[in-house]
Image (cartoon, one colour):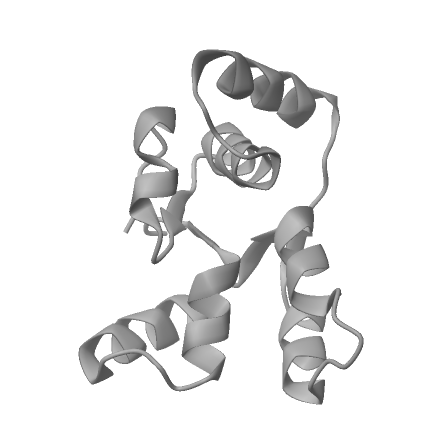
Length: 119
């Protein structure tokens, strides 16, 4: 079994909206075909609009959703204490770190100080 990934919201939106370069789209398709992992924050961000396309609903329904449990909460608190990072990004970073995931994001600068591996 290879590396495991957690997808950030912007990556899912860009993938579903066909906004990625072909090479990135192919790489992301391999990750998605293997296993889709999202933080509960990503689920909220993807489905929290007044109108949501069925494709996004289906995508989230086929995903493994990692909840905000006590361990991730404590790690989120530590990340927020040590870094200037938005709460949703801190939760995503903590989820990736706790579960040993590489984060797939288009906003790598949001996560640079967290030491979460990202692609």
